[in-house]
Length: 352
Length: 129
Image (tube, rainbow over all chains, first blue to last red; front, side, top):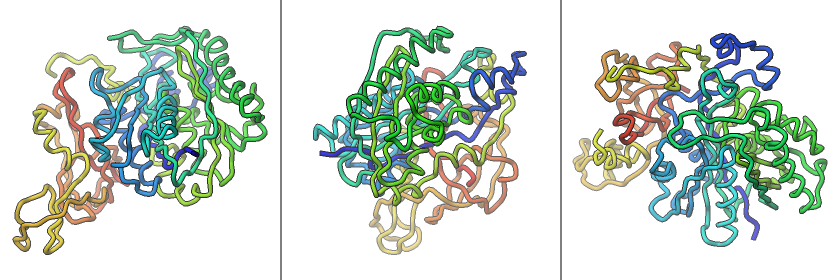
């Protein structure tokens, strides 16, 4: 049985902050941060946006692209994030209630740094393939925080991508998938800690590059394909530089990657990152196109997928907002003070 | 907002479920037991389209306690494309988008929370399009 994506949707906050605006507060050199991270600006969630609200909007767009699928047919909902609003109470309970999928539905929240979204995609795909559910909804979403002044503050952004997996009316089949996991402590957040910690340059070669290369090379070997066989490729994008570098190390070209390369204008949306890049690719893909995707989650692991786009893609692309439109239009720029208020970085007196 | 009250309002706050009179087709939101147009008592549950326009608006500068962190904020009366007129907060707007007749869509947003340890209340807000 062929299983794949039957509907997809994205949702991005409208607010942005530029690298220069953050750098001037901390006395940092904006041009060197822009060059070093490959970022121009990042998205910022409004105070009334969180992983649940972004996920609901992305899921609604996915349902529309799935031909206004009856949400009662969705048998599982998995939301991958490292910024779930509740420590105990799954985000999926609110999302499922809001889209009308309950009560006959299996729900779980996933967490694996930046690859929790692709984990959800893998599990939803697997359950449909096994015949346990007719349709499965997987969402990657985050509203992550970087500590003030830390390099992560320039990149930690917000966004969500939702995928409905099924075996009928597929827009992109999942042909193969492979996961690569090791114990590599490059980025973590201990319980009750507000901000994550990272191991500086250790997050590069031994973590991101080794893991993404490991997953991607193995999957390419397993399917007997080479980078030139794909029209599109998307990798996890913790900044603007890593995905392009790892893609070129594997043999992909800028042309194959630039459509899904959102980080320079969006920042790192963590669990939403490579899934959001995939939505931007699906927005322009043509029937028959092959897409390569590889996520990365610190800790560490990668999920790699090979997709083939079907004829139905042309019918659904225009049914919901395009990802690049949400990225580039109707933006509202914030000053650092507004950003600090939005992200609850200001310590207020009790009761004020 | 009390947890139980919020829970009872999910069909409207989350899914925009209205009661449509089977006799005269008038949309009621929130649902009611007797149609104020034709006195009909049979209704069909339908989800409203998430679009409408601003009829009027005001800025709240002295808010009730659950919304104190959000002030100043905008509250508008929005006429939904399906007919009902709803009072709701407006979010993600630029000043030039604040005008009577402005088209809006309803987005799922946080409305308030019961402190740092309490439940989070979700529902709809208007966003200019």
